[in-house]
Length: 348
View 1 (cartoon, rainbow, N blue to C red):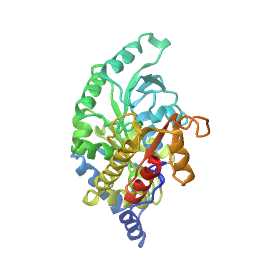
View 2 (cartoon, one colour; view 1 turned 90 degrees about the horizontal axis):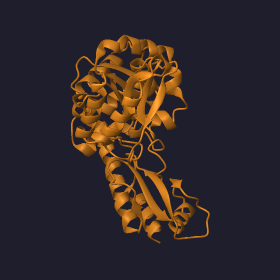
View 3 (cartoon, one colour; view 1 turned 30 degrees about the horizontal axis):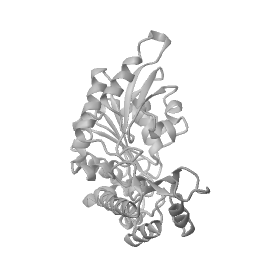
View 4 (spheres, rainbow, N blue to C red; view 1 turned 180 degrees about the vertical axis):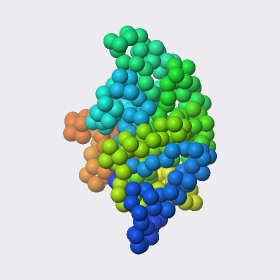
C-alpha cells in the first residue's frame, strides 16, 4: 500500500528495455547521438511544434529553474502560487540560478490561481521604478500541487493576463501527463495553444528513472537555454541514457497510458475513501488526493504498513474521531489489491 509519492514507484518496463537497447555499442556524447536527435523530433511531433527548442535535464527542479532563469532577468520577479513547487520545494534554486530573481506569490484555491488575483498581484509590482523588481514571467503548475487541473480556458485566461502585461508564461508540468489525460485534449492544446511559452515536461513522476524535457515554444531564447543547461551541470555526457527514457516515454503514447492508469487508480482510491467515511478536500482530477480521515482510521492504516503522508494533524492523539488530512499519490504501478485493502482498513 504505497501512496506516499509518484516518485516511489518503479520505472516502466518499456523504459528499462529502452535503456538496455541504448547501452549497446558506442555513441557520441553530449546529445550528439542519433537517439538524442530523434527525441527532439518526437517531442516536437507530440506538441505539434516543429520549431520548439527541446533540451533534456535529469530533474524537475533543474527543468523549472533553467527555463525560468532563461525567461527572467535578475532584477525581475516571477509570479507563482503560494504553494508552487518553485516556492516551497526547490530550496531557492529559482533565485540562485536566475542570479537573484525574486518570487512574488499569488493566492490559490486547490493550487489554482485566478486571473483576477494574478492581475492584482502583477499590477502591484513594477510600480517603484529601480527601487523594486520589474515584472517577470508567470509560472503555473499543471496539474497543481493540490491535485487540481486547470481547464484549457483557465490556462488561456491566465496566460492572457500575463501577455497584457508583456510577460511570458512558464508551466511546471511535472504532472502534465495527468492533466492532459484528465482534460482529454492534445499536448498542444494544453500548452502553447493556450498561451504557454515554456514547459517543464515531466517524466520522472510518470514511469521514468529520471528525465524531464525543457520545451521552449519560441526558439529565440534557445541558445541561452543551452548555455544555462551546461552551466547548471545538466548537460550529460552520456546523453543517450536520458534520451532513451524520453523516447520510450513518447513511443506509442506510453506517457499518456501511464498517466491514465495513475489517474484511474487515484479515482478508485478516492471513491473508496469516501465510502469508508472519509472526505475529499477537492474533487479528484489527477493522481494526487487530499482527504480527511478519522485518526483511528489513520492509526489502523499505519499499523498495517500503509505508506502515505499525514499532511495536517498528528497521528498520536486522544480523539479517535478527529479528522486528519492525508496526502495520497498513485503512480502507474498502483495495484487494485492495494487500493482495495487500504479502503477496507480505512473503513474499519
